[in-house]
Length: 128
Image 1 (cartoon, one colour):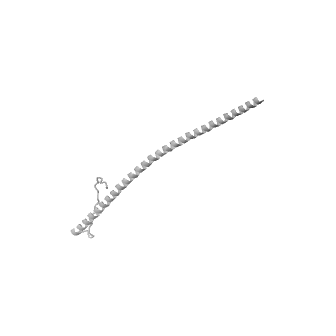
Image 2 (spheres, one colour):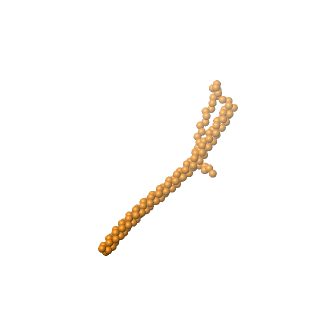
Image 3 (tube, helix red, strand yellow):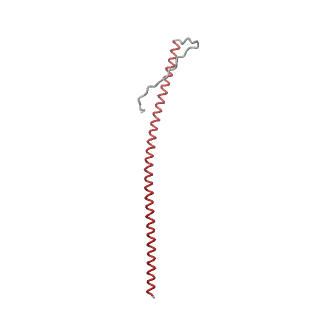
């Protein structure tokens, strides 16, 4: 499942060959053993670097998934904000309609009361 990306050549610094304490150099047996140790250490370094590279790619994929999730949530949030704004506008319109209806009702009550008072006054005038 791991994707294999083209690998860059890995530069490995080789350890300098040690020299005996007396400065005379190493025997071929010592040299052979030392080269084996150096190769083994180099292989371990390469293995470690490959492991780090795989870990890095894994983290990159995870970061990309998180970024996609962030983008999705931003888009969702923007949509919710739009819906909220529309709902507030509708609520404001409904409130204005309610107040207008209330004022109209009050005007009608006042007009009715005036009409009733005028009618009552007319009846009193006729009785006299």
